[in-house]
Amino acid sequence: MKYLLFILTVGCLTAACATHQPVSIDQALMAGDDEKILWRQAQAEQRVLDGSGWLYRDAELETYLNTVAARLGASADSPDIIFNIKVINDPNLNAFAFPNGVIYVHTGVLARMENEAQLAALLAHEMAHSICRHSLRVLKSMNSRPRYMAAVQQAVGRIGMARELARLLGVNGSMAAVDGYTRELEAEADRVGLDLMAKAGYDSRQALNLFEHLQQEIKDEDIKEPFFFGTHPSVQQRIENARRWLATASSAQDGGLVKSAIFRSKLDRLILDNADLDLRIGRFEIARRSVQTYLDRHPNDAGAHYMLGEIFRQRDGREDTAKAVQQYEKAIGLDPSFPDPHKAMGLIHYKVGEQQLARKYFETCLLLAPEAPDKAYIEGYLRDCLKNGEES
Amino acid sequence: MKKLVLLLMAACLIGGCASAAYKRSLEDLPKHDFSVEIPDGWWKPQYIKRYLITKDGAYQQYVLIQQRPIDRPFKKTRKKLRRGMLPLESAKVITDEIAADRNIMNFSILENNPAAVDGHAGFKILFSYRDKNGAAYKTLYYGFIHGDSFFNIRYAAARQNYDKDLADFNRILRSFKLVNR
Image (cartoon, rainbow over all chains, first blue to last red; front, top):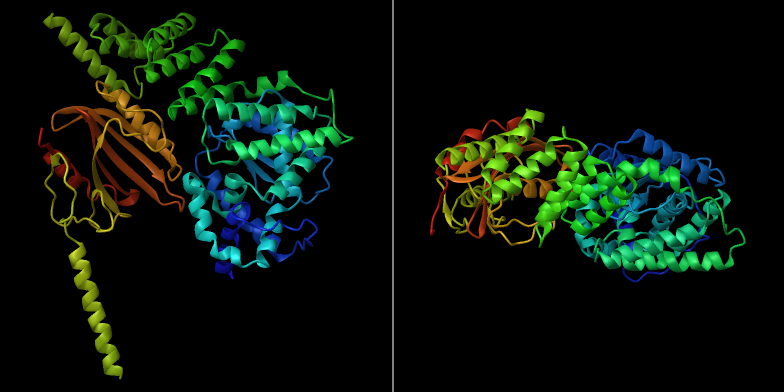
């Protein structure tokens, strides 16, 4: 039974791909054993995620996100689902809901939002998947269509780049995170989500703004993420559905809540942390823009200037070294006790053979951070500087 | 009939042992611009095309040696290794690449220090991680850039067995020599 369920649920991966018949929306939702099994499986997958070391830990931010979710959920008729929003430390554009109401949002998508109404749009869409029991409906539709089972291999192959994530998330998470649901179920999540957003008093137009903004980013940065909000067709679908809903829904809120200031205050730190993740995977331009956005609001943040310097230094393009030096000097000027820009300046001078300057910066760095994790490297470079200084 | 079944089973068993013995060789290790001395008891799994050797199976421990062109893109990070990079800088590219791997959970750098391999300045990183099933591993990773190649030699083992074959790895590491240069 367990194996059969596994095969069936893995088959869910095919639900959003290949050719398929639309899932019947009015199909009876017998929330019996099947749903219990689905929830248990979701909980098991969540345990893996929660213990993976990938969660972004910021209690204040989590409280804020859950407050927004609670506001949205207040008008939803789903007393059995307790929504719980968690953040994954990942720069990709993604968010996904498990059937039991646990929703994971990547730092990458949060960092690109401008206000609380846009956050509400994303959360409401994901909450709608749980409220409308989309996982269960896909599972039930598959029971009557065993040919999906034969397509499992094809589905996993199609996921391609996302295979690793799919393996880690398990079947529930994969379906929600990687491919999304069928077009019809996604359209329903758009509709229900926008309704929730409007009932909670948010400006519904911000949903459209968010999706258009994401689409522009995907195009500008040539993002090729296989994930739901990181693909052009998925976001285009969201845009079309939001436009349609805004044109026809009587509950569409024009001039509703936007709440930019509180949103920014809660997510400021995340923007910088996510920029660091983008920097690590070498998405220099995305990282630069995020840090610049942060610096526009906090021009005297030494850490942000240092990070901008790191982006230039590691990108190592034309004139990047000069730009990096400028940022490091700003960081040192703002906070002379901050060791990292001293180290970075030392490396720049060391590489071009300016031993005296390199020595000055390395010595200051070690003085400020005698137990720096990379102190063995710095000590080695410093020894070279001293040796070369004596020889000359 | 019973005897025949027993005979067949015995033949299969012997055949299986013979083929297992055949697999436990170092014969098809790929050729690169380096040489190492491999202690007794290590073998290369046939299904792996890379320069990978193990004693008890790759899930227990392995030593992997790679030579890759420095301009070959990594799988996770778009950062690239470059000629003239300092070991601290190349170590950063490697740790960023590993940290972005979604097969690796609870990634933690335990040590990151400069190190020389065959006299070439490089780095040494010791890190721990878990796989999806919760199994814990430790990896000791040496790397250096030489010419247009990035060489790395690493020892990975289940965390509880990490120390068991570390001495063998250190022997392999000390014997590492660049050739054809």
